[in-house]
Length: 280
Image 1: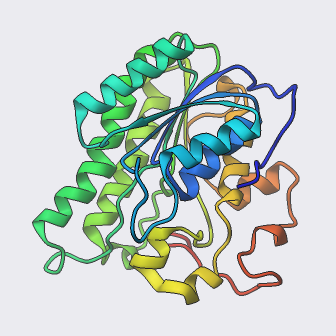
Image 2: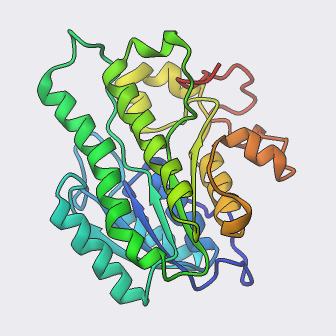
C-alpha cells in the first residue's frame, strides 16, 4: 500500500497515534498515512495471523507504516475486551512517551433490522461499535489530556434523522452512538479535538464486499485512501480550530482544495458511485 503523504517536515512528525481496526481497509490506510507523516503509530486489531477469506494482517500494516517512514507498534487484541484495550493503550503510551491521537476505526457491520438480527449478532456490533469505542476513548483520554495536539477521530456518520435510515435500527443505533460519544468529548474536553468522518460513497473494504454488495458494489466504490487523506488533513489541524464536527470525507477534502477525486476510484474512469448509508 502506498502512503497517502510522505513528507519529512509534516506537522504530525514525531507524534503518537493509536488506531483501532488497523489490520486492513480504512484503518490500515489511515495508519499508513500517519506513518507517511512521520508518526509513531500503535496498531490494534484482532487479525495477527492471515485470515482464510480476508487479506491483510496487523503485521502487514506495520510493514506499510514503517515503509512509509513511520514507526509501528502492532498489538493484537479484541476491542470488546476492556482489559485488552486498556493494556494496549497503556503499552503504546509507555512506548511512545504519550499519545496525541486516537482513531476509532474498528466497527462491525450488519444492517439487518429488529426481528431479523440475532441477539448474538447485536451483542457483537454493540460490543465493537459502542462498547469498544467507549473503552478506547476512556483508556486514551488520560494521555490525550497531556498532549498539546490531542485529537479523537471516529469513523462514524453525521446524525441523519431521515426515517429511511432506521430500518437497520440496531446497527444505526451503534454508529450514531459512536458519533454522539465523540461529539460529547468535544463538549466536555476543551483540550481535546473530537470529530467524526464519513464518506459520501462506499469504500472498497471487506465489509462492503461481504456484507453489502459484493464485487459489483466494490466496482462502484472508492479506495480507502480517500478516507485516509481526509483523516490526515483533519488530524493536522490545531485542536482548538477544528472540533465537534461530523464531516463528510469529500466535503473536508474540498475545503482543503482537493476537488479531483478520480484517483480514488476503484475502477478507473468510474463516475457512477454507490452512495454510502446515512448520506442523502
